[in-house]
Image (cartoon, rainbow, N blue to C red):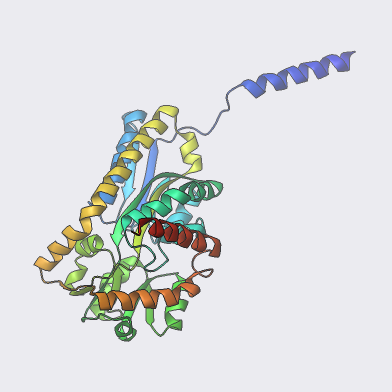
Length: 340
């Protein structure tokens, strides 16, 4: 009888603890965030606003630190720092996001597949739940999505056709082995470098061509070293601000709500800004001497033909085959619906 009584007490205790709130990690007093974007840029500012929202609910002792300009290293370095808890959140391009889950490469690694922001939004919205679920499995929460503009080719000498670039030394993100292999395989000369070494390498002649969005070219004054630009929309630069799940879970409900409200505002700001930022950046660089080669119908056709020949090498090697096919199917359906 005594053993039965003890068993009943144990069961009752188990039931009681099952309904008690779980005690998690203490809410952090400091939020550390990182981005490769330049200090003072809109990307830096929206992260600061998320930090202010965090501080507003944590009191005067709370701190929010944003590290811009890639001072925390490459995006691969930043992801490693996130995983070990040295950072809490980061605004990453797909170059960093792919270190968490490869499926996100579909948003940025498919050359000349996307033709407008409308198409980028369509694909991202269709696959957003899948992408965010994959990131959640790896321990990350998406705070907001954002875009940095269309990649154009900036070079020291004027170039227009795909063949012209075979004589160029082209910057490639350090550690992007598949991109290096693909470019070498089709006769190009890629040079893998950290983003921070891009400008010094242009000045020394180690590279002479950089694929870059106009807003970053303007901020870094790259146009002074590469005064020629080809106006072909190669790929969009797409990204997201992610937070460690452990950090997110440790936030109080009120702080979490404030952070997510600031994140929603950040997403809206970036979406509105992307419409005009390329044009404004290009006008500013033209005023100080940038010469732009327009994408004439002949040039556009040459680059689309070149890109379509590259796609089979991108599929499976740089973008998971299933995701690559999903994107193509979504765009094919969408474009068919727009035809007269």
